Image (cartoon, rainbow, N blue to C red; front, top):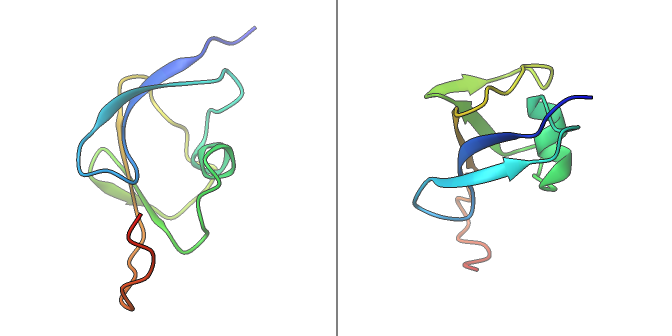
Amino acid sequence: MSQSMTIKLMFNSSNFADTELPSNVTTVGHLRSHLAVDNRAVINLDGVVSTDDSTSLVDGGYVAIVKSDKTGGDQS
């Protein structure tokens, strides 16, 4: 049985926050599905853009999810 992990997540915020993930969320793709992140969003792992959804997440790692919305879009 795998254990959950905690990452430092910046998503819909300007700050990183400790976020505990379920044990079945272990990759970028799992995280994208778990948080319902749009496929156009960019996910950075410890400052490096992840281009592969199979990339493993690391306990204690920094994850920033950024969606560039050049039209202004939803400000929520």
